[in-house]
Structures are given as C-alpha cells and as structure tokens.
Amino acid sequence: MSELASYIKTLADAIDDRRQWLEASEVPKLKEDLRVFQTSYSVLYNAFLKKGLVNEDPYKQEAKVREIQAPDSSNFAEGEKMDKLSVRFANFDNQLDFLVNFYQYDIEFFTMDRIKRILSLIKFIDWIHFSPNSASINTYYAVEFTNKIKMYFDQLTLRLINESLCNLERTSGAVIDSLKLFANFNKESYKLKARVAIAAAFPEGETPTPAQIKKKFPSLMPGVPYYPELIEEIFKEDHSNNGGELRKAVLKSLTVAEKDEVVSATPFKQHLIEGIQVIGGVSYVLADVALKLDENNALLAHKKITLGQRIRRFIRELFHKEFDSVVYDLQYVDHARNSSVKRVNFNALRADIDKQIKNFSQIAANKDTSVAKLQELQENQLLVFLEKNIRYLQTLHKTLAAMDEYFKTNVDKDDRSRVKGIKPELSTIKTTFIKANQKRCDYTAQKEEEAQFKKLGIAVPKQ
Image 1 (cartoon, rainbow, N blue to C red):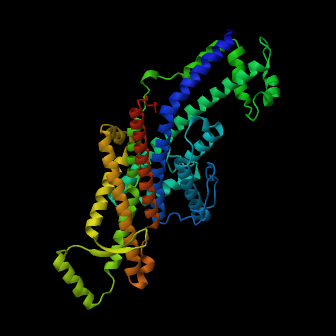
Image 2 (cartoon, rainbow, N blue to C red):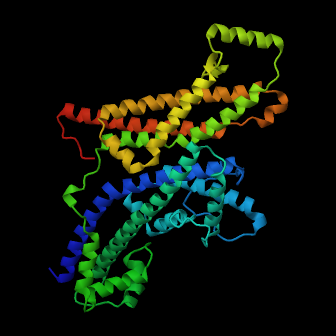
Image 3 (cartoon, rainbow, N blue to C red):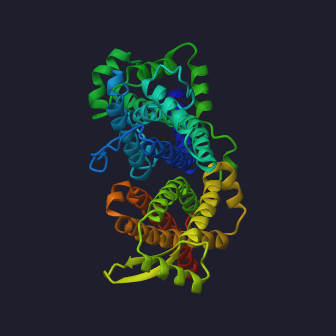
C-alpha cells in the first residue's frame, strides 16, 4: 500500500470517528444551546414589544421561512428606526423559531453554506460584545432598548432579562464554537472525498497540479462546489516538503479526546430533561401574563356597578368567606363547544402564577446547573414532574383563555380598548406544553420499544 493510500485509510477512519462523536455529543449540544438562545431572545423581544420600543410586525405570522437568512444589518436614518427595527427584530424571532423547531440536526445537513447562514444569524446582534459602542446598528439599538426596559419592570422580570442577556452571551459563543467544529469536519471530509476522486482519475505516481484538478473537477465530483483553497491544502499536504507535518496536524484536529468516555446522557432520561427545559422556558411568558392580568383586574375594579350588584357581591363574599378575594365566574368552552361556568379566585390564581414563574425561571436560568440537578433524579421522578407541569400548563391555558374573554366582555364599554389581550402569550403557552408533551411521548415510545425487544429476547439497539 502506498503512503498516500495508507494516509487516506487512516484519514477515513479518523473522520468516521469524528462524525460519530459530533453526532452523539456536539449536535445535541448545539440544538440545546440554540433553544436557550431563542428563549432568551424572546424575553427581550417581548419586553421591547410591551414597552412600545418596536411594533408588532403585521406580517410576522404569515412569513414563511424556508431557509435561514439573517435579517438586514445595513444602516438607516433615525426617522426609520421604528419601522426598520420592528421588521428586523420580528424577522430575527421568526428565523430563530425555524432554526430551533424545524431545522434538521445531523452532520450531513450542516453544509458549509448552512454553517455560514447560521453564523450570520447568530451574529445579527453581537451578544458577546453587547455595547453601545458597537459598530453594528442592530446591536447599538438592542443595547439602547435593553437599558430602557430595565427602568420599567419589577425585580422578577428584571432578573429574567439579566439572565437572558447572560444566556445570549454564553450560548452565542457556544454555538459559534460548535459550528467551527462542524466546519472543520466538513472541510476535512470534503478533502478526503476529493483525494479519493483525484487518485482514481490520475495515473499512480503522477502528481496533478491544482490547475489540472480544477479542469477535471466537474467530472470528478459532479454537483460539488470547487473550493480552490481546499484543493491547495490537499496539494501541500500530499506533495510539499512539510507534507508529513501537515498531515499529522490534520489527524490531530480530528482526534476525539477520551474516546472511550464519550457517552451521551441516557437517551430515555434526556427526552424527559429536554421536556422539562421546554417547560422552564415559559417563565418569561407567564411574567408578561401576570402584568397584563393585574392591569385588567385593576381596570375591571373601577367598573360602575348598581346597588343591587353590590349587595349580591357582598352576600356572595360573606357566605364564601372571601372578603379579601376577587372572584370571577369564568365561562369555559370545550372542544365539543359545550360551556360551563367555574368560579376562579383571582388572588389565588395570581399567587400561583408567581410561584410557577419562580420555579420555571430556576430551570431556565442556568442550563448547566439545572441539567446537573435533573440528571440526579430517577427517570420516574422526572416523568412525574414533567407530566405534572404539562397538566398545569394545559389547565392554566384554559383558565387564562376564559379570563381573557371575561375581561374583554365585562369592563365598561368605554374601557374595552384599554384591556390587555393575552392571545400571543396563550399561543406560546400552548406551543410549550405541546412540545413538552412530544418529549414525553418520545420517552414513552422508546421505553415501550425497549420492553418489546426484551420480551422477544432481542438485544436492545444502542441509541
């Protein structure tokens, strides 16, 4: 076997090992980092919307993303600020949603073009150097808006905002690092395929020049882009005086450290942990809901009522011992369009929401710490916790939808335009428990599959 053929075989083995490691370790890590990145950006974006720093993009829900494309980063006049940033920040939110929830996560899918697209998207705002001195106009205004909203929110929301900024800085760096690993893998994989094609196309012992390779390349690798800098690297590694050192450096860059210890978290447990982290991400939405409920409740409290209504309210509160409580009779509508009325204690509901905001924000605040704590729990404990919180969000969604309708129909007619609607938040809550439930279903399906294999006496396939 020639020296070149021996190197190609060694390189192919190294690339295969590297692929397995990236698929098992870095791809799941990238997806999780991007999920945290998206959730953290949503905290800021919703705060910008709430304080009127940007407007809702009327076409946001209709925009269909088919491939990642970073929003515009060109400069604009001061008078265009509201319009330009409203569209850009909404587009950024849409792009992140597509990337996290609809993108394909495997090594082969992350081509050089897609890696460049994701890098460009992540760098749309420079979270690592988040400063008013930034040359990026989008970063400049994101800093300005963030400083403004910090003056208006309560301590709990401020903590969520600060945690989100920390997460955006950390995860943007982590995503960039992961994409660099994928880019290096793609580069060496491309060079391996090109080497094999070149070796087959030219007589053994002949050293083709880069110009000769370029001429034949369309027939050697049909449909594959020609990267002259990578072909030049191949030429130097295989035929230059220091080619041996260059090859060693390539193999070193592909080495999987502590190969035998690269074991991903138990796949079954990982589904549950991911589901719980999805639940944790809803904390910022509940914080927005809480503020709107308080404003609507205060608005309704000033509604003019008749003397008879006051007497009936007093009697109801007297017999139910709810002098210090605000109670609403909410109308629930099920899927069969049947309706029922349920009495809801507003004060108790708000206290419960505050409690859940605190609990969920602890899960979302520090990914590494929360994952470590969740890993310590048994699978059945994680399953019970996940199911409990899915049911909680389902019930809360139903209650909040009824309360949203109640406020809109029961305030004085002149005040209806002042009612704070929560339909966007309801949509996010619903999406959250659907995603979390899918993780629970993935867990259940794999456990059932494992049980069937064991029942049939078949070795359980490795995940």
